[in-house]
Image (cartoon, rainbow, N blue to C red):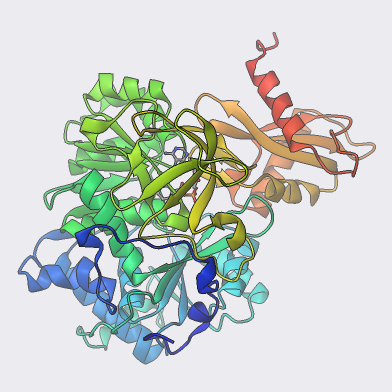
Length: 547
Ligand code: 3UK
């Protein structure tokens, strides 16, 4: 066995066997890493050593932290984790909060102490929080006190969770109180480049979310590939955006990329398009990360805000429609930078720098990555054909104890589940998701999970949930519902079912459209035909609106 700093070896023990990993390739000089590294040294400690400790780092709702101030907080939290809370290298820590400076400080502290962060989306409900707690065998949670209710509800469902420390409203045993009496110094644990430091959960198409495991090296590799070669930010930049830090799109765009170049980042707890625009103006932000639907929504209100500070706008999470690219260019003079990323890959692997963008295409493989289009049989397809996207590079998929590893990684390549076309010039053109995932306003939503929530309502006999096309959100969640005998269809029933789903699972997953039907299309073996439902949804949305 190679070197590890982990004393608790759960994460390492539950990596897939090495022969099922994707081939990891380090083809650029900047992707050559030593066998031991703690990425926090590069993201944080380096800047203080280089005399740049007074540069602004995190701009939050209440406070701005310089790199030196953040380092002190990180060190104190790391001392609390190790000294007071008994974290050992390799131990998993659940992190739960909206985007704010404390999220970043706790994240870096866990990594500096050799621990593993398990991040959860702030909107998740108790059952959805319990799943990663149990799957990753988490014993310790750090949580914003404003999100205490659902975590407390999750506790009886997650027996391994022994201790929860809250921050925010100053309880006597809260994080702030524990930080007072500890040292502001902490030496980074000498982790291996391949020690796991992050388990990020994806929402699966069927059933359970998948835990993707990332190493210290991966967090640097995404910065040395996409960050360095495509984004090309400078220390003077101010980053801003909407994705949760618990989603790797947000982690990279709002924490890793800025800190890798010593820039500042504005962290907004709420970042709807209506909130993002004034924040860009107020903070004179220069680099923005959000979903294509948010750019589309902001377009209508651009005139009311001064966004002249913007220099680079990154769009990811779902395909960027050419019309949105063109309208944004028209309105701001800026070219939206589309990029496809995935939780499994950590961040973006196909994109284009501004001067190489071809509107409508996602781009070319990010330096350090290779991509190709393959057929159903796994063989390479020539340019022009439509097929399955396969990629490889310095990062790649390693699921936590999950058989679906065999599906995502084939012949050493990551097969993302997307359908693409490669053109003669090497540009990749997105076609569709190959599977059932509904991507609505940048969120991934699994139909079966919404179905399960609907079915727990007594009035629902049967249901099927698919994505229906929507100009604003890309897709909306649409439910086809067969009611139980004696129940009356209508707007009141639809509203009751929507409210019910919002109570059961994260509210953003609720079905925005509900259609009552007398039966669902089924296969001979009794299985729901999603394909047929999608066709119905498609036909309904393209039909002229009923008078
Ligand atoms: C889809 C896109 C077309 C695609 C993500 C940037 O979205 C991210 O991660 P997820 O695991 O979903 C991955 C899937 O989302 N997708 C993402 N970006 C695009 N489709 N054009 C795009 N530009 O189906 C992909 O397989 O939620 C995005 C960085 C980090 C991320 N985790």
